[in-house]
Length: 179
Image (tube, rainbow, N blue to C red; front, side, top):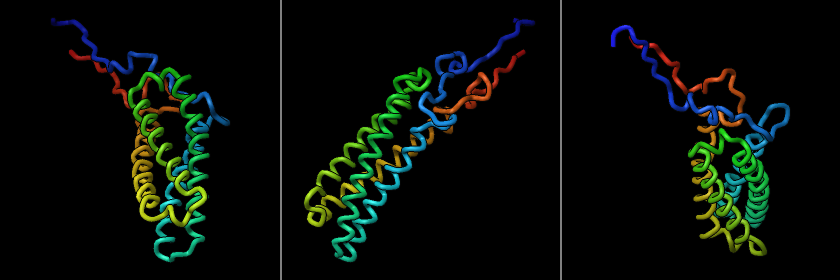
């Protein structure tokens, strides 16, 4: 095949449906979901910290703090989850990626853990800490780490929620002519 110009292209770069990844729920171009997830992440870690401080000091204050932090983590997680779910369903380039659905499933599992941790503490914050509350807190922090890592990967590797500066996704290699 002398003289023929053969071009290799990235199949992702050829699928224009994957290029539409810009957030539809944003304030001044900043995706709302990305801004909101910081709250449930910090509050989930705070629940574990308060549980550990209660275990160390036996001060009922820390059991109360853990209960309120679990409540805040759940409420803010639901709000962040709503914005993320709308983005997932509305933006075709997000919806068409299996990695987005994996992040969604992890986030729903995490919300279930946080909700269970909060429900366990209602009316009995001190009795709920040891052992079940603390175990739920450890698991929730672990799932938070995995879910957050996966969400970050979506943003940084696939540019989910961002506007691409050009038509080619940042991870797609440039096509090269082979002679």
